Image 1 (cartoon, one colour):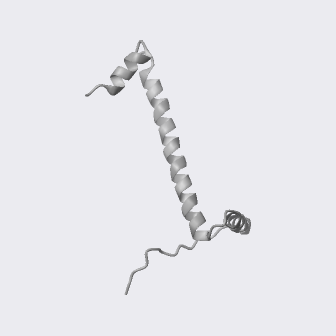
Image 2 (cartoon, rainbow, N blue to C red):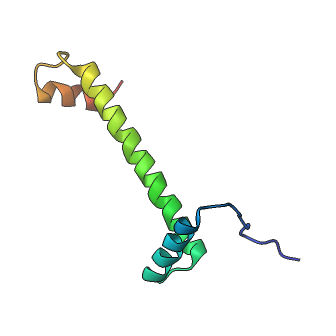
Image 3 (cartoon, rainbow, N blue to C red):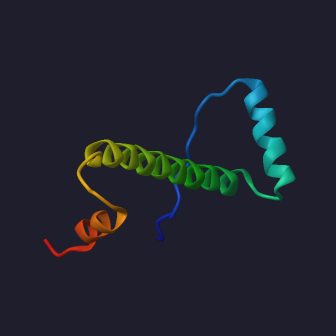
Length: 81
């Protein structure tokens, strides 16, 4: 007997959200499962980008006044530590 490679999920959403989801799936010529997987991938990318930007801001704040030039910064970033 083979095991399924997928699992069934069940959750509640407002009727309007369900209609929007079905409409999106139809417009994209996707099944509901395929659209849901794509939505999860997009959300993961969004979170990764958000974290990257947060770290960029943190790095900018931490490095203020530490380097005289961009060249000095790059030397620091690419030096073997």
